[in-house]
Image 1 (spheres, rainbow, N blue to C red):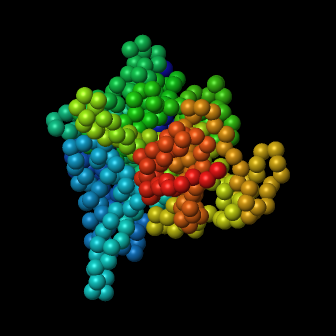
Image 2 (image 1 turned 180 degrees about the vertical axis):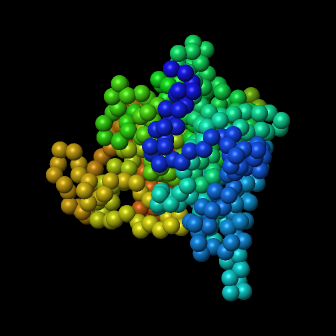
Image 3 (image 1 turned 180 degrees about the horizontal axis):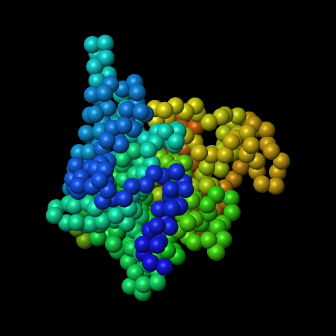
Length: 397
């Protein structure tokens, strides 16, 4: 099996999931069907403009174009700062002002229709050349949503002793140094050697890349099915991918003090949910909706949030007959040590806050050190919850 065969396999699976396909050289500025003004341009701007018009029909054209320009001109010296700025635009909308009836009105322009995944333009491109500061690189596969390169896949050949999954990771690190502009818009990085396949973010160390072990969230994939196929089908289908992007990515900040100088430094790490966190949280949200008698918030084409959970009416606790809606019995998620309980709580909170129209979420712990840990995690990941957490001044037993 060659690297090209692995690439073609990935492209075929993605096309089966509904992605359109273009060969990178063909849509370059000097290609047969150009969609870029130059190799320096990483966005497919006409696709982005078309999507913005389609998703935001009530926003004036000038404001739509201003939103596109804001996305295209993100330009901090720091890669992760740029990435976080874009992620906020992607998940919270791009802020614009325009005149209406003689008054200045503020509004949001949405880049992706999270509520209706089918209303988005999904494209997979291979061999997409990017030139930045005179350096030329060509990532294997990019997944574009509305002209935005949200997913990068770097593939190696497992039959080559020098081309392991770790070498795929090292290649991504090289891309980050030489063409950082591409990573302004990245949400997920996938590395694979055809046998193993793992996903992470722009700030993930190699050990933090994780496998996606199920294609449907119900049973673990057979070891006879390749990890790359499971990851593509289970994680990169349009519904799951957009749900992950909207609800399951956090930028976690931590502060460290140098014991010698006393200087504090703040470090930001971008984290994405592992497969077990993703499915557990969505089941927990579904159970909560059923228990409270609520249905999913109505969705529109203006960026409102889809829940991507099982129907509250049909959800039942394993081993128990279907429970009545509104019975106030939400259920339990069981975790093992080190499985990411704190972040699962953050993801759950962020999603249920939207689903239940801004409820109050109370987190109860039985140890002071656990209370500190949970509060720190919520405080460090407030972008996912949409607000800052607070602690009660007194405790009751």
